[in-house]
Image 1 (cartoon, rainbow, N blue to C red):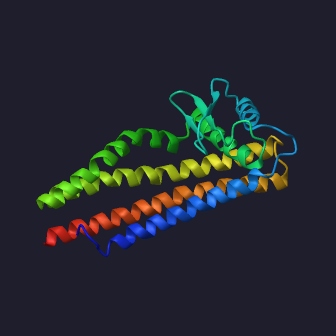
Image 2: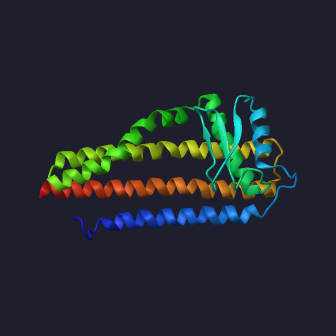
Image 3: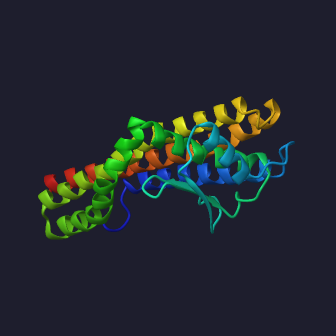
Length: 228
């Protein structure tokens, strides 16, 4: 069980899926990073415009180190743009920035899936920290109950990722609508931004697929332990 096991194929499949998705988003972002918007607007300019048009005046825009580490913090009401996005005028950067604005709009409007994701964070963190120790201890001690408890906790992580999917897809739809309705990008430029956001969305799909495969593997292992 601790050496090669046929269920490892499930882990390998999940890893390959994630690698393909990650490579695709990097390649797509790089491609459209070379396409500059005709209005020469920077990512933070676009964020400020979208937030203002949405009636949101209490969200700060900050720069954060890293590549595509962009995120919106609901608790702080801060929208952070990474080094690869902040100050950039590319179609790719504007698409990512608008996506984070989509999350800010969700928060302002009380979008239920976003609330649900926020509520599920403690359970997901708890599951991520304790699931594997319980599974390993359960297998080592021959305690099926402990191993199953670990698998149950790991399911919290999977559930969180499933809840994340509609939140991310909805934020991208809001982003594209804002870029279109605000006349920020032309139709051709909007097409590039859509490709970037679609590639980014697939990374979340890949993460869910990988976690589901891992969960399936853990279920198979615990069932085998119970039979032994």
